[in-house]
Length: 265
Image 1 (cartoon, one colour):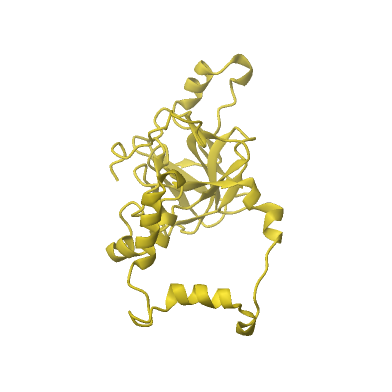
Image 2: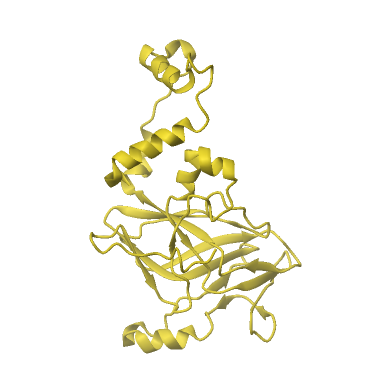
């Protein structure tokens, strides 16, 4: 990924759904998530599977503010290093290099000394649990939250697993971070500043919580209505084309709807 070419370009013609704040100057700009999953998606899926491309493009990529490495002994000790460092350092809480001074120089007096840590390890209570700060803070429009998750449809590292979480960023103005669990021991685990670490996705508060308690389901085929069967037939059965719909028909229909109604994007 080149980054600069596809860097986030805020739309200043309307109130934004989200505003990112770059605290660490070195941090890479957020980037609108890519329909091709940063080039990782198979060409056949990219051409014909609208479900995959839509999911891949839903949200923004967030990158580590620099490349670095972790190494875990499988128990209590985590070490970390980065390019230009003089070796490996034990990790409990670590500031981004030189950031604390930059933060204090810019912050008002009552906030100085409170620069967020770049890395944190909770191995005393949760072996292998790591927290990584992206160097960003985010604020969303009222009633919108951020789902923090691994990048959709991009192959994941075998060295760690990201925990997912929802942050109500319209109310909570703090570091945009992720918790992850290390899964590889006694070998370096690499984090590349050129590859997305996270994908953040906007979710309206109406779509989670108690709203999810209201659901229904049909328990047997005999309970399907005529309208249900008609919709299923429209989707799956094409008498003049055979038992299956054309390859990519859903993708074509969705793109046509998007073209005819661009404001829905």
